[in-house]
Image 1 (cartoon, rainbow, N blue to C red):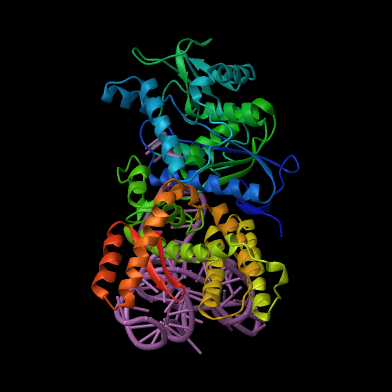
Image 2 (cartoon, rainbow, N blue to C red):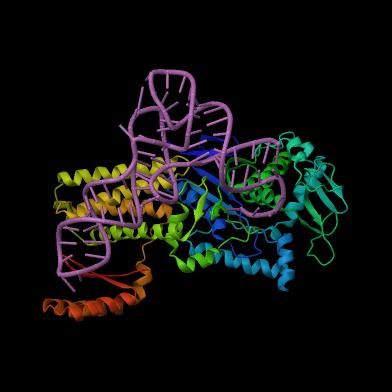
Length: 479
RNA sequence: GGUGGCGUAGCCAAGUGGUAAGGCACGAGUCUGCAAAACUCCUAUUCGUCGGUUCGAUUCCGACCGCCACCUCCA
């Protein structure tokens, strides 16, 4: 079965085949950097990240471009409020954006273009549209003439009369048509500006994405992703600008991520009910937040609340326990060649294969991460079950389980091998803990429960958890 | 007014024209000095309501109720 993607343009699940065999070009609408990003923003960024990881897992060479909108009305307003310059504010928040997303385990895109670094390209594109009579200049601003693009509305399925009927459309008398939108905005006194053939000003919002996507990925890109609120007018306008300019389809698959909600309503900056990603990251491990964000399909709304995060934390602990145990079989060197394959091996081996195909089937069906996680946990259950019995499962089978499980989990980014995290301290810590465990074991042998419990309780205070198993006591960090 | 989406166990959440994945929580048990972890068992004859199509619908169609979003900046 091949990959299928739900395309907002056709409103259907479509077979995915990239323009160039084996290569995928992908553009994701990034943040306007006037503030830190909230978890809702993170959801979209994470979905993009996972789509990219999965495409890579499937063997595609992916080029991902994600923009940073670093000039815009809100940036100017916010900078004024804070008494700083728009460029300084954008720079600070841009850096914060990378900090936050990397803490969430989101890999950097191949290119992170900034609007202010593409002014000449935008001017050129606007000029092309003016030359094609698809744009007009009024008082130093340039507007796109929506009427000149017959397919306008094909993405959002909005008819002109619907838009005009909407009481919320602010009618600007200077526009020929209320639907027309600005590609170049004349600067007001005191605002940052760039020179252009039409006077001093700054680019409109939609033009930057058209421009930067085409510059870095070509005139037709494979996948264009963004939050569902961007469908109209942002993406509709991007299509209008790009396709009229080039005469070619702009994006082949449009992917829109549903909102993250909080208390049943949309988490949004204008609603002032958001939680910054960095604050959430201070409270929960990154894998927990990732697990939560992908526990529902990306086109379905998801509600943020502490209970759900708690659930993810518990579920992830179970997954990690399983992987940590499996890892021992993976690391230890065994003369495994001589081991026979038992019936139990065959059963577990087939469970591993089942899980692997469940995972790819789920992800192939429009990146159904919720279903994919279901498959992962089914295998976790079976592996755990085999630990409990003296099942005679061979080390290479466990090793195989570890490989497949950790690989799939890493596509989702819900399992990171933390060897390097402890590597620096392990040298000291390992012998120290072993000494403590030995002392504790002596106490236990003498039934000195006070001492043994004291060691366990005190270590727990330090987030080190001791477990007594048949093979002796173990320790590990608990988040 | 226009457009789109959603309603599945206590909670979260997949899914299918043929009889409901997975997670969390709860309860009972196994193991343990006690814990922890793990495991076992238990939790929806039923998928918002009412009709229709069908041999059969939670899944398709219609109506209704409820919730949400977009149509203005927002991921």
